[in-house]
Amino acid sequence: MLFANDTEDTLQSIAALVNTLVNTLVNDEDQLTTRADLDEFVRRQEYTGSRTHDDVELQAVRALRPDLRKLWTVSESEAVQIVNQLLADADAVPQLVKHDHWDWHLHATRPADPLQTRMEVEAAMAMVDVIRAKELNRLRICAAEDCHAVVVDLSRNRSKRYCDTGNCANRAHVAAYRARKAGKSA
Ligand SMILES: [Zn+2]
Ligand SMILES: [Zn+2]
Image (cartoon, rainbow, N blue to C red; front, side, top):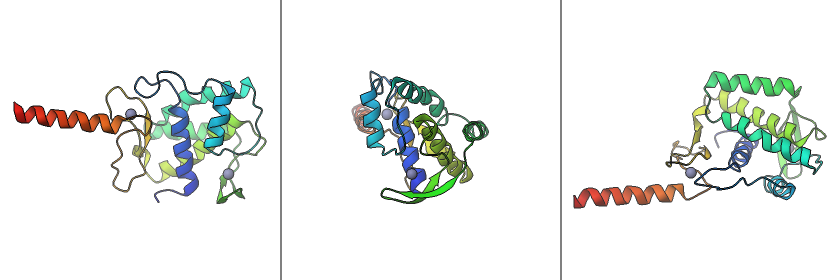
């Protein structure tokens, strides 16, 4: 394990959220457009705490995506700025908590805070770990041509290059195989 469990889970959840955006190779339409989409996302990613289940909540969560995506592309110093701003804006107070089936982990918001606030503060707290460990380069964009999906590389040997959302690794292998074959016959 590279980071604490809650950090790794959060990074995967945030990547999944960002990857609901339109991406020509992965989704040809936005995957988070209805309240039912958000319910399903929250259920799958096991977010706890209060919900309003209205359009305000949906739009607020949708609006987080471009900002959170930036964490995959900015420099370390820019990431630090984003994270510190998020934590300051939310008056984040880190607390160790235990709930449901999870062992001790950090919450820096209250369960009654809006879903979007809890999501972005959780993302910021995970980034605190990533940045302190000098591991920001584990957050990258999928290596497949034309794929803009974000990737969290938690592999021991830093070998993960393609997103989980599409067939990018397969496509790349097929392309490499064809290129080798073409090279041999030439
Ligand atoms: Zn929790
Ligand atoms: Zn991809």
